[in-house]
Image (cartoon, rainbow, N blue to C red):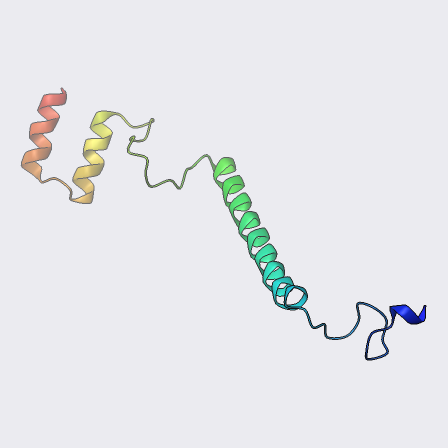
Length: 97
């Protein structure tokens, strides 16, 4: 190694603790950011794959009822969950029939 490439501590260029804010602090911050984004991306990829394989969606924003359930089935489910009482159940059932 040439004499001109030595720093003040006698070590080769690029070794030592470094005195640059950009070399130290930003390197650590961007390394952490990289790993956080990588792990978050892997988490969402695995979650998406699991939902795709199972055929279920975890989206809570979907207002559409289950495509396999008829109106009567949905009514029965609402009654079973306690969302409507017996009188409402019977009235809606008559309307649907």
